[in-house]
Each structure stands twice: as C-alpha cells, then as structure tokens.
Length: 155
Image (cartoon, rainbow, N blue to C red; front, side, top):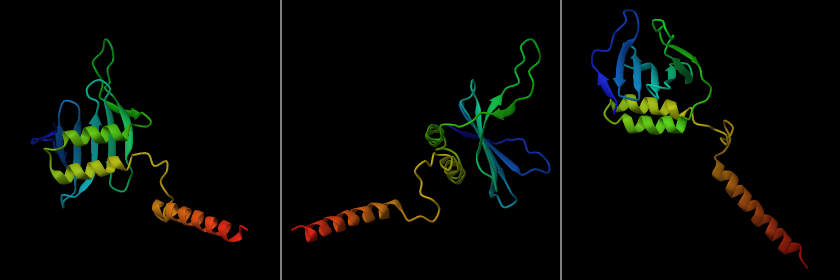
C-alpha cells in the first residue's frame, strides 16, 4: 500500500515534491506554488523489471524502462530511463488503484486519470463524432425503414 514519505528531498529552484512508496511502486508528484500538480512519475514492477510512467503539465504520458546502472565488477552507475515501448495500462491502472487507497485522494485520482489516458483507443470515435449509441439507433431505424419499404413494394 502506497504511503507518503514525509521527508521527500526538495530541490531548490524546482517544484515542491511529494513521494509515495511501497514495495512495488514509487510515486513522485511535483506541485506548483498553488499546490496544483505539474508532473508525476510512477515507477512500477519494482525491484526487478522497473518501469516508469512520466507526465508533465502540457505534455502527454510517457513510458520508459529503468536501467539501474548495474555494471558487473564495477561500482553501479546512476539509474536512467530508457525507451521501453508500450505498456499494459489496464494492469498498471488496476495495481495503482489497489495501492493508492491511503494516499491523498486528489493525487490518486489525478494519476489514475492520466493512466486511463494511456488505455488503447482502437475503437474510439473521431473527435466531434456523435456518440456510438446514435450509430446503433440509426442502423436500427435504417433496417426498419428498409423492412417497411420491402413490405410496401411487395405484391
């Protein structure tokens, strides 16, 4: 269960940072002077195959792998984010929701909505298109009209 780490390191000149942590996830959020979220980074699948979702205001959600900087026989390097392709947004969202019950509700909801934005939209209508139910009604009415036309023209 994610819990806030009260002594999150603050970097002078950067947005205020909050940190939530458990054994499988870390959530860092950055807040402006009005306490509005301006960014977050959620790492998941710790500690063996860690991945990161990053969002910044004005941008979109990005996904990356975390290279821990392990170098056999040498001192470890600093972790860095590396390209990692698509991610299972449904699984990450499900796990995040299960783990965020004890954190600030507004923060949890904000992050969940951004992860939802990463869900596949294969069958989403184009922007400005009427809702899907209208297509179903139009199709049904069209079939009724065709049926009536057939009955009227049948001898």
